[in-house]
Image 1: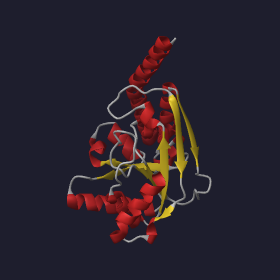
Image 2 (image 1 turned 135 degrees about the horizontal axis):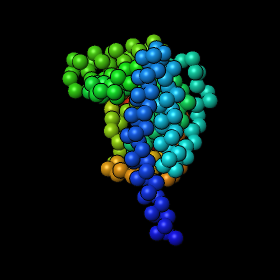
Image 3 (image 1 turned 180 degrees about the vertical axis):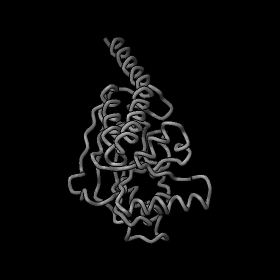
Image 4 (image 1 turned 135 degrees about the vertical axis):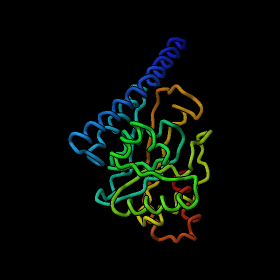
Length: 238
């Protein structure tokens, strides 16, 4: 019985792995068609990434529960700051964070045919993380877009955790929050490390919980206090 269960889990994970590229291309092409022929962009296209994320979770046998968003004002922009345990974090947030939000994405991704075009139409925000002056300029541009009403999701650790534990918070993400002057919402993701650890390809079925903590008023911090803000965020994410 255990052998059959292991085989089923393996085949299910393999199916999800094979379908992800197909679904990604399908969603990207649909975004481009809607953008080109119906002039859809931004929030009007968000149902497609949400469907993409939920479909991948369902195929993988992953159930998601999210709590703590009830008190948030949906007319305001927020920076959702999540811990980063797994590549699967992207799927669960896209599928189940029921908010109109965008991703901050590496500038290089916008140069990829199809993917980059779809990301632009979805109003994702490019960030240059490699070059000092350009990185600062892109950070300012991102902060302006957030302050103007665009909610975003960030992974303030900067990379996936190798063991599921919270890594040090990067202060660059805190600079963005302080410059934007909006509330920072800590999102603690539990369970994705067990489903798809860093370095693995096949996801396992499982349960994911996302808990939103009380927002932090980033506007109350100066740029000189960015480490204090990072420490406070880390406390809320643990």
